[in-house]
Image (tube, rainbow, N blue to C red; front, side, top):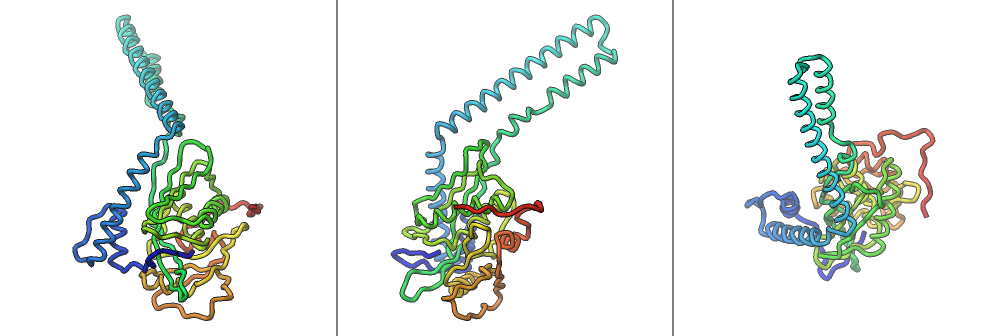
Length: 331
């Protein structure tokens, strides 16, 4: 991943990273943080507010409106049916009481059966409910496009929603405040399909939205794809990547982690940003000379997406792997 901007973004300080995280989670600002951290906090709040307003404005597509209308109609029909059955039960109870059968065993059995049926939630309606929106701030490693490049740590805002339909994967890349190059977009989209297959998941009902919260910054390259996509898998599985873990690398069609450039610069930037564990491809790029691991940073070479996911989350990517399981080749 390479960033290009009118002004080169620097790695966030500890206070600035905490302020960005607080704004993203809706927590109050800590007065002990620096003034620069306050600017980051206020900028993040403004960006999140603008994004939410735009998302609300563009959310109601004709298909979604039709789905919502159908859901409401089903709910209204269910309420009418329940009310009718309850009315019939009361009427039956009054009539049986009038003829002296209210205490009989068969009536109690009938009443119990009706009660059970009334208290059962329609499984179809339950399955149609969406699982809700999940969001996470995802750190990525990069290098600046300068004559003497430096490593950078940037944060992306990732939103994930599992819809109740299966119309296919939807990946949205916001164009403001920053943006993604076409290469970066294509890399992320392709790797989502590959990694979802490795995890035994179907992305047909997923909506994934990514945004760059830095005005004027463009994200280039494909070295962000592994980190971003594994964060998507974690949200889909209800799991979590700790904020002090990060990865650089892309994913090959057969599920391996491909080498990327500027690894020493990226690891150094991760150390400055107080990251505790950095995952890198186990195959070293020839352009990278020998380098030393920064103090207090655990650098973990990884070979596959499954190995990388477990190193990031402490959970397996796929709970059950059939004996004949293998990656399929993707064009």
